[in-house]
Amino acid sequence: MMNDGILIDIESLVKKYGNLTAVDGISFAVRKGECMGILGPNGAGKTTTVKIIQCISPSDGGTVSVFGLPAGLSQRAVKAQLGVVPQENDLDPDLTIRENMELFGALFDMPKKTVRERVNANLKFVELYERANDKIVSLSGGMKRRLLVARALLNEPKVMILDEPTTGLDPQARHMIWQRLRSLKSKGVTMVLNTQYMEEAEQLCDRLLIMHKGRILKEGAPDELIKNEVGEEVVEIRNHEVKGILEKLGGLEFMHEEVGDTLYLYCRESRDILTRLAGFGSLSVLRRPATLEDVFLRLTGRGLNE
Image (cartoon, helix red, strand yellow):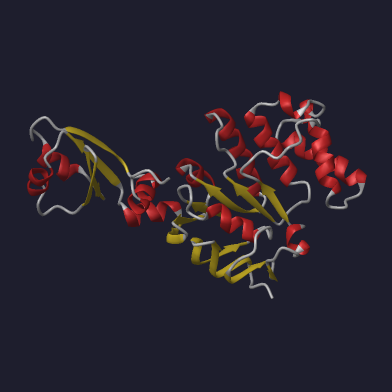
């Protein structure tokens, strides 16, 4: 039975590939009408998690309920209510835009008239209606991603799964897709978004899970995570001698982190810090607002995750 307002309910989920634990006992819920973001580096377990929600990969432990039904490979009732924008482009390059859409619509056993009406409406929504008879090979990367969004809407899903929807796109194409997704969200469409883009998470998500090595490190609204984890301002200092700077700043409230040639100071207000640093040698000092990227890097580390 589905809890009031909760469309996806995950408890102690585990997924293993041999000796590798890709998802390590995570728990979270997604409520109707919200966009839940799953943020993490490569290998964090994001895609594995959404594949289990999609009922295309089995779990090895815990429970996953979608629309009040247990997720599983044979759970067609769940799959029929999901719209999926995959990480990889899986459009048929030999078919036209319209043919790709109609072929996908046929998988849901919808009447041909309904499919045609929805194809037309969805192509207009993503501004591809005028290109409906063009072959996939003639489309730009941004057009292909917009088409995947249109295709995911054909079955009028209750939940959209967006797995890295704007990876590899230029800024113009990325912002256009964000506009379309915000429009869907304003109409009450529920979303689960996997992303590595901090700006994408801030643009679209009501809540975030920050994952690393199969575990959830933090959960919360983007602005709350920034305020709670790093404060409101960041001072970056280069050409520094850490011990001397920290002694100079003794008694002030801040957190610090040294990475490579940069000392990061996280604080609520940097005025007193900057005052004390004035005239302190040949420092290179940058003052800026704290961002979600600061939270992400502070929690998951600033080294490469390969």
